Length: 248
Image (cartoon, rainbow, N blue to C red; front, side, top):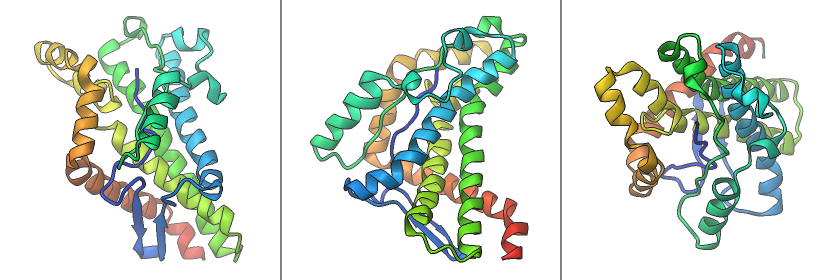
């Protein structure tokens, strides 16, 4: 089961501001809810969430558990992953109340860890599949952005959408790696800990989302987790695209 954050949880407000200084890009998400902002953010956000969740189910199937596949959750259809409370109600309430942050979650992908061929190890790969898909998507959006700029395509909508795709996916990647269940990072940590400590960590799961909300509201996650890891993954995707950037 993986929780997916639906927005930035950063000091700058609703969305992250990521500076790709070595290539001259400043990725700043639009911080309003205009039609233009929704249009720019909708496609990359839907892809980011949908592929994230489908990746968990796909990985589980590869390692021996068909539960998600049989329930139709290994799908790129966004409606398969919408949770009425976490995807719609919570973000809507936060919007209407003028909350300084926006967060939510998609419908958890069902995984029967007992069916995995090597539950302790395979569960790590299943958990990492979601954030891994966001890393790949961020890389693809950056490649698109480099090509648009390199070929002189002055289409502001596509450029802004590419920027949004990078920011959303880096944000979802880092947020979901936070080591607290039911986030993906919590699943990884539980698999790595000795049995007693793993069980103790698992007992936090019913309260995990509320603990995360508290940490978001106080700015702890932003300062100690999001900011440094966002910078690291920003550097990494820039490094991986350096040959392409040299061409342009």
